[in-house]
Image (cartoon, rainbow, N blue to C red; front, side):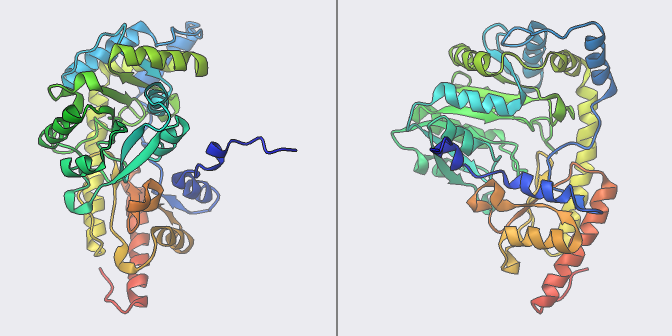
Length: 395
């Protein structure tokens, strides 16, 4: 029998995040710091609205683009939080998580061979989505010495005549890096001059510490060449509800809706009704969760530095990205040995691109109790590595 599998699909690498998650799920007494999922329950008033929608029998398809009521609330939210004006009838699409928005946006924009600039380390889906849409991924390596921010000179060096899209993955998973207004203005100048479109993944926009998130779409001249992608998973602790959205130029949204129609039909109806409640009344919940994450962030940074591990100060999302290169081990080996010896799961930096070598990602979307126990185990592991290499153990 002939091989019925697609070469394109076979060539995709499985997610490096899920590998360690699958192992730890079957390991007694193991602690996972690997998955980027809030440990908070979805706020009760949001769950209650989902329950109420079921009780009222609201279990039918919505329009393909999403509930009008939800799209209106999304537009109000974007105006309130990032000072962007969108038309709910033509410039917003409700999707099955932010990941679907990334996928169908690339399929709606790319022709075979079009190049997509993907700053890495970054979320694992960008490169596969580009490949599946017949695009050509071009990796731009973010540097620790630049606080993992994208620099205009890096952008210019990567642009060719075939460049069509720049992915903007900020606040960043896995590094926790952000882009401030001055950074975005410098990038926008290049994008306008070179006529490049932007996919701005802002799923962690509510989780910044010490400053408000700035959307690149709010920079003058950028709204018409930017698709803003966001969702409810991270900020409202609604991962399992599978709901996201895209806001951008009407002609692009129209093409995305066509793909969405054939592949999905519509996002889950119950989730959409719950999301209306989240958008209207959830700002206080988000603020409380953000405050808790910030406390965990500060604890984690202090604990990691106490171990003698260099660690860039993450200012967004809920991850830190410590540098473990001094041990002379690959990120994969470090994470594997840590799991085997101390039963703590972290994610190798290489899961987010080859330039993540020498780093590991630790999520602080976990309780302080779990973080304290896990970090104690990590400290024991680091001290053993130091002893093996003849270095002085750290406190």
